[in-house]
Length: 375
Picture 1 (cartoon, rainbow, N blue to C red):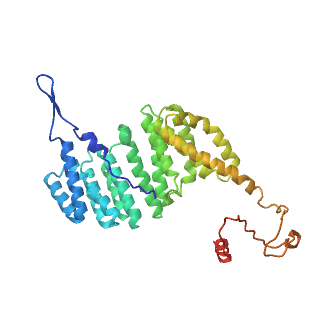
Picture 2: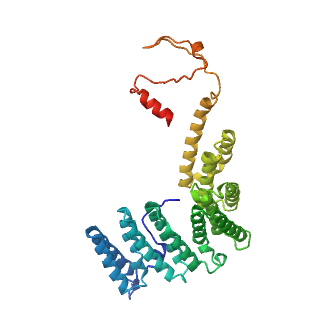
Picture 3: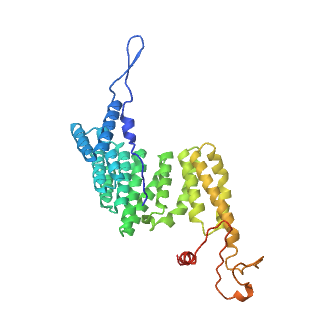
């Protein structure tokens, strides 16, 4: 299961806050509001941090009292993430889960506003981290089910802005089902969601966001999570085809450029390791496109550097690989030290271990070598 660790930033918070209020009086001189919503939020957050440093559980009581004064305030409720993250840092998974769940309940209560779907997904991601740390995903499963029930009532194709988080929730639900031994039902759920994305991208409503969602979902379905085992191999070629079609249609999309580069990295380093010639051909094929994207896209630049490192390692490994299963080359020994002179002819048919070392190498014990051989 993927693990995420990042400070919570709710897009809805900053989209909904008024940064400043400018009143123009006669003469055109601007007067800035001294007590804006943003300033009030900052003061409350600063006070909460101070209380968390002094007594974390007292900070919970403090925030609960503030939320009780204004239970529908997103500014107040979103601060639960700070509390939960601090409990998570201390590996108090029970308290962390409780705070994340209260924040999730706030978003679910306001599910009629689609912008809260993004806050829901971000909270689910944090709850996934709690589940990874505690080894108990029961709360995460319930959270995913509740979120899908709350936000999944209206079709996503009527609001393509919600397509990404809804699809991610479906994928996570399927992965959890597969890990619990419900592989057939999980695969059926995934196939329906992928088909739905295909239909949307084949319609007149399709746009860059819907195509990006399709590519990202396929990327998640081909990740190395255990939950992807029932379908990973099936979706690899589909991802490659989708990302190439997407970048052809939206070549200036920075997000799709990065998705394209990431897919090529996975093809080169993971999915074609058993065919070095095909991997080398792919590197040559995609390098030109990736170099073009890298002129403005730093993420692509970084991925290109990783591919180049892999290409050099692959080239260095070729001579070694060519020796496997072949007779050992002739020895050209100047002198033997602390051992009788050996003739390769006398060693034929025997297992021989050669320990190559330089004058600056430290001693290696026989016990260490045996342990390494056993491992």
